[in-house]
Image (cartoon, rainbow, N blue to C red):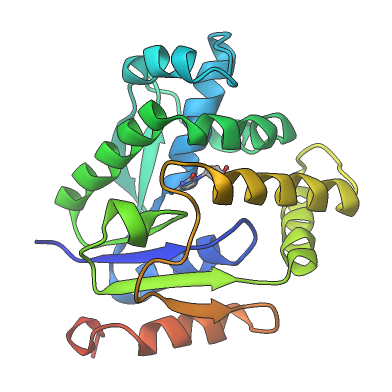
Amino acid sequence: MNRVIAIDGPSGSGKSTVARCLGIKLGFLHVDSGALYRIMTWQALQHQVDTQSEAALAAFAPQVDVSFSVRDGAVVYAVQGVEPGDCIRTPEINQHASPVAKAPAVRTRVTNWLRDLRQLGDLVVEGRDIGSVVFPDTPARFYLDAAPEERARRRHTEENQKGIAAQTPEAVLASLLNRDRIDSSRATAPLKIADGAMVLDTTALSIEQVVQAVYANLPAAWRAS
Ligand code: DC
């Protein structure tokens, strides 16, 4: 059975960068599970599905077809041959993603995709419920967190660098706190610390320090020589 490193935590906790760096260091494929919830959201909006309606999302979720391929050490996604790129990272998608990710039918679809990806190789998977629900059997479970202001600062910088619609730092913080609230309080697979997960506060740590801390706490046999 291929190995899985689960990295959970709220937005801006450093999951993506850390997961990518770890993947490169260990030769594990990077999997961004949030991007799959964003793709579901993007598709729902494109097809005028009411993102607040669990019934509408339950009917829609099984129709979304995502294809998977591996490029540059990561699993990449396409819908009907189109890779979504940054159009799944807009403020509009940010706003609708948490309601969509709350819907049990959406979660089932994404969870099944993620579990199937294990056939492709060893994985480092980032998300909210990876250690608690998707791969609870993995011995490598981590939960990253950081102060909300620092998380918002990181997201704001990232959005500016990508040239995504200008939002004030305050607006980024408000949107992020709203998503955290919905993600942590939903009934199905809420954002939480998985049993036995190692918790790391990344507020004052560099990426390299976080990567080292995760690496040092992997099962000994997994560490590259
Ligand atoms: O990590 P992100 O901001 O790209 O995630 C987008 C949305 O998907 C966010 O509302 C959290 C949700 N999500 C989730 O519920 N479970 C996951 N495993 C990953 C993301």
